[in-house]
Image 1 (cartoon, rainbow, N blue to C red):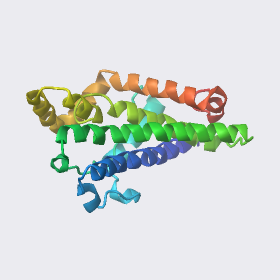
Image 2 (spheres, one colour):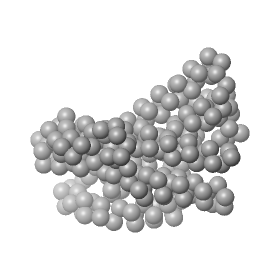
Image 3 (cartoon, rainbow, N blue to C red):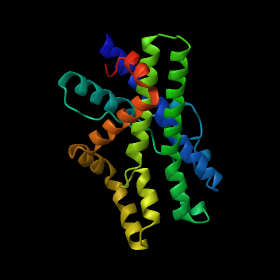
Length: 222
């Protein structure tokens, strides 16, 4: 039952983390002059507008179950449908994509801090609901994982937008061309163990944000 509960809470937390991430991209793009996401109806909190059947549900569910029942240290991750962005609306397309790219991870960092602060406040108020603390802990970890993972400077991740701005033009173009191999790159990163490093980092920061008492009450680590 505990395993099933963790799976449900993890999928719910993932959805609540990836949707604001994508909306943030669209809002910053709109602020910089690109109405593409708004016209596509992607600045909505309606999850049906953002869900990717594979990336938002099937893949994370499969990774959670495999990690839980086999002990293989797979990193649980997923994605929503990318928000459409047209950088040619920006005064400086390359610089504009830097701000658009940073908007998603920054949103997840903020969400993680808020979730951890709420968990600490509830603990200090005497709340002892372990399921609630489990959800807030999972939410904090996943939000941090999404932020850290997307800051990796390889296409199609958000960090590549930042890196591209500082590269010569011909290298920037090569990075854009690599985006079509995004899924392959992510799989290679996972096989190399890089995603596990990111996951462990997200866990470590989450425990620091939550505090040892809250982390223990969540039941995720002790």
